[in-house]
Image 1 (cartoon, rainbow, N blue to C red):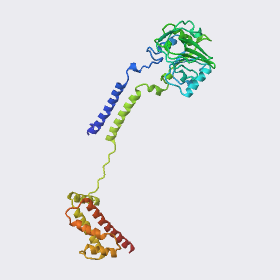
Image 2: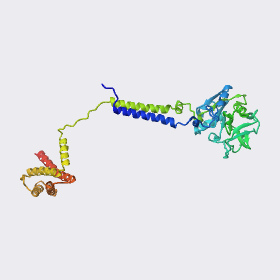
Image 3: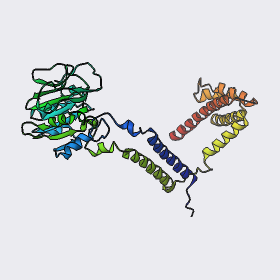
Image 4: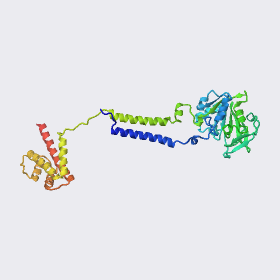
Length: 396
């Protein structure tokens, strides 16, 4: 028994393999280069100049209780006391439930260090000016001696926005030409600290001037002279703690799609070879319908529409003469009159049909459509005779 692959199956396998290869090539070609996938965000996973991996590792090496937070703020319930949440230029805005959870976290005693110009998306009470500063490194001097500026003479920062107006409960810690760029204010038992830019904690900025001291002052509790429990947010940078979120950032989804396509092709080819075989039913050549089809095909190919009309006319005349008890040579006009009188076929058009059929039967060529119309009319009268004969037998 031959075990080779059939030509049709081989063709399907080649098509499936070609599609798989095409998907792999498109994945490789369309994937952006690594330098384009790096976004300018201070992520603790990034070692680029704008990243914050250095600051995160520095806190860990100094034994600060720091960890990455990859869950929504709704899971911060009960974690507010002596806790600092760092939201370093978050990219994705929160929903209403998350925004409310952040407010409750601060009101219950939590601290938030927020950097960037989109703070109003998270805390609606924060209002920034519409003025867009020049995004260049600037050396700024603290405007007030506070615990955040203890031991700090100059801070290097790329300013991303200005505070609109300082309220009674707010404190301007650092200014750029009289415009607040570092602001703190109390909310309930907690506090919000806003930086106009995240560069003091970035890989490129933490070693500039007194940025390192300024950063440590911010993450250290002044009341207990010990560091806060620090949660460094990565949730709003797109990091998610669920397995599905992790899989979405890997090529695993594309690989699964390619494997699924290959499995479908294999199953399809296998089912074609191993499925049940159905033998089509052969119609008997003795079938009356086949005889009719064959005869009709012969008439059609020969163009013998007149012959078909003559056959139908002769059949109808024979049955009429027998039914009426007339001779076989009875003219069509007399035959039609007798049928109208004795069979009740008044105004049936039998005479016209008989005369039309007689003329067409003597003609050499008749159009197929005309021949079909005449034959159908003759067969209708023949069917009437069949019905009449059946009714008579039932009455007897």
